[in-house]
Image (tube, rainbow, N blue to C red):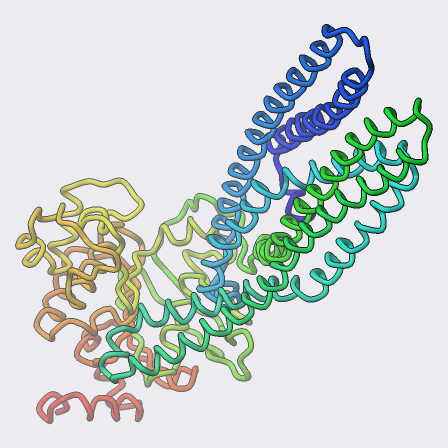
Length: 580
């Protein structure tokens, strides 16, 4: 938690300073009031005391109470501002760091965990700071000042108070040993519930298709039960603190008055009034100490989860992305060439290379296609082109420069990418096509037309301004693919990368789209990952992959004569006439 608080800005430190000043003032003012109570007690019980002196003490008590009230309000204002602004700062920092992560870091933490860290964990920190930080400042000052006041009174009361507080201290030690580890585990169980829920929501169609609703219910029930059982054990233990605190508070009051009665009886007449007034003040201070323990209990209740949340947030913020920007912020060249030179790559934690000794060259305006069995490394090649991962060995040369020399934004500005699983965002057709760059209506319409999406877009209410729901659930899979392709076309890039993007299209739309693409975007180097030979027959170069290696390279005709694996794929997809 301390490491996390070191990330405070100057504004946050100013809030903390203001909080400390006003909470300190509040505590001192509150603990000064009992002194005037003692004076009033003496004056009331002393014959001949002037009424004006009593009123003067009363006015001081009212004034001090009002000042303490004002200090409390201002202190809570600083506390709330500090908690809200610091948690906002944390969420911003976590989001920015996750945006900088490569796929390797995202896979290491898992998507569900990163969502929990940027939402629930930041909320835990905010709760501690808004409710607990006030107590963190208040409780030590309150206890220290009250104990100092008590220690100046009769030693019998001081000894009895210390003995009574030992029970509260023992209870706090028990909670630290028993309950706090369970509070720490609650964040892990929260992650687990989030993951099960997320998988259930995203895989709803598969779950229903396989009649697996009960299986998923049981899985969620187990995760929920683990969380609930752990939470109950922790809460039950923490629940003991309040009755124990009340018992100590009542026992202190009884003990103080019993000891006071004994002291008064055994004292002389002159000293009895002094002891009585001290007894009133002492009981007030003892009550303040017990109240401080209750505040301490609240802090200890919140600290375990907040400390785990802080360590999880620190883990994200301390993780340096493995993929770093190069010095080439604004490339001068736009040649449209790409070359792989003996590139090999292995996924983190894998036992074997996903790609091994890959070498090929793509010249400006060429259409390069990749084909191969599932798991042959096609999408891995795309990940390296987009620099979602860095190659283990070898070089990738883009426009004459090593891909590592580019700033990631500069590299990706050169590329129009359509992913294997089309992704649409909440908004409109227009905002999805012109995603994250300047929106020009004519360019949007052109991109939609080239992507063969014009027919269904014009039928939607609003045309290119028609709404798109979260995840594109109001359009079909093929329509999502075409809008994803339109997004790539809209960028007018140097390179197109279509990662099995045409798989959801029928053969006629597939062929028409590729023909229009080639005619209207001539000069743009295009990479196509495909499963269908019909999609890539006309490519300038086809690269056949098998278990991460290139086993064939050439045109369709050349591969039909020289590459056995390509021939096998062709025999499963093409008619005898097409084969001939």
